[in-house]
Picture 1: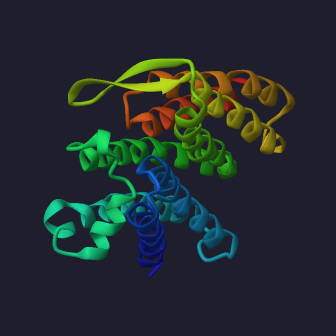
Picture 2: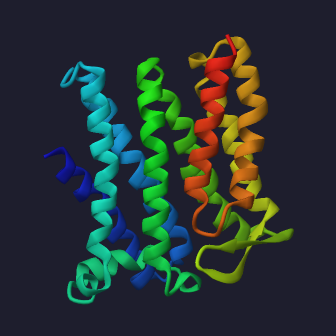
Length: 248
């Protein structure tokens, strides 16, 4: 039942974005970021509510629920394969919310592979944070992914004057990013670490404040086009593990 609720919420968000694209002329560059954030945020948020309500008390049970929630995101992608979306209007409308013109014909390929990579990285991080009772720290990475990287593209499009190029998978074409957009990742990283400062010791907090914003910004800057979420999760996982394990 929980998986169906997640599917339903995610699809409504995607469909609303698709309507904005098709009816209001909103760029998919903007709506797709909301979709990416919802795919990652919803499973963790619902699992934390599930756990806080005492529905599952065993750490292994909680971990398995989180894994199932993440993997459901991959199943969600199956809705948007071409044979289905060409025959079902509401699904095609929802797909418009992620289908940037510059990503075609790799839109779904990049989206699926990035989602799979992000979830594969998130699964061991989830298990680790659960084992030390600091599951809330995963929201540092989610906030950087959702708000920092999410704002990077629209801010870059609107205000970006200092451009640089990045590659993408499966193609030699280069894509443009901006320093102004990347600055959103840095600022969000600072705010996210401060927001969860109570979950760190003093030494851990200082190191996190120094390392996470700048290194996550560099991860976003040098990641392949449309694969930045996966790279942000990987770098964030490594940083959190090192900070929590090596600093008292």
